[in-house]
Image (cartoon, rainbow, N blue to C red; front, top):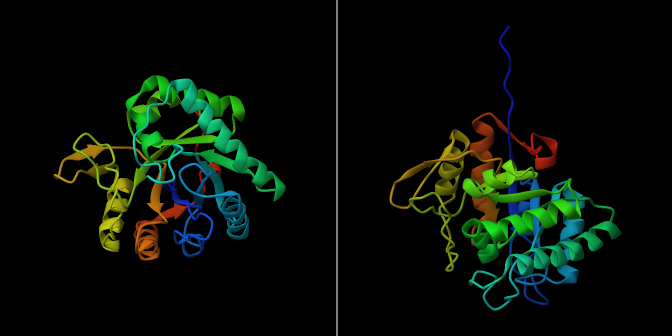
Length: 260
C-alpha cells in the first residue's frame, strides 16, 4: 500500500491596521479563511484598541496570532526606508512584539510568530547583520516563536543559525527577477485569479517575476494583505486554488516548523 503524502501550507494575512476612527482592511472577512494573522503593533499602523480587537478576532476564529512590527512611520505606513542599526531594529521588534504579547496574555491567546513589516522586512533581506540581530532577539524572547521571512537566502541563513523560521511567499505581490517581492505603494486591486495562479506556482515550488523570470523557492506560508482592495475576493480565490490542489491550510505551529 502506497504512503499517503499530506501537503500542508499556512495562509497568513497582515491585519490590525486600523487606527483610531480610521478603518483599514478586511480582517473580519479574511479571518474565517486564513490560518494566521500578523497584527500591526502601533508604529506603522494600529493602536492598542485595534490590537486588542485583533487578538479577540484570532481567538474567535482559532487562528494563529503573530506580531507585525514595523518602522515608526504612520504617514508612510512603514513602507518607506529608514536607517536602523542592528540593535535599533532588534529593539524595535521586541518593543512592538511585547506590546501585542501583553494584550494577548490578557485574553489568554498565545503569540505564535513574528513577521517584520514593510521596509523593515525589506531591510532584513538586504542586511545580514540586521537580520541576525532581529532573529536572535526574537529567539531570546521566546524560542517557540516562529520568525516569518521571505523565502530565499535570508530565511535559510536564519534557519541554519538555529532559529525557528517560516519561509514566506506572497499571493498578491509581484516579484523581481532575482526572487524578491516588489512593495506596491499604490496598493491597487488585483485580479483574484492572478493571486490564485501565484499561489498555485508557490505550491509547485516557484515564483515568476513581473518580467517572466522563474525563481525556485520553498515556502511554508503564503501571505495576503488585508488592506488591498478586493482582499476578500483574493482570499476566496487563493483558498479555492490551494484546497483544489489537494493541500490543507493549517497554522504554522501545527505542522513542520521546527528549526533545522
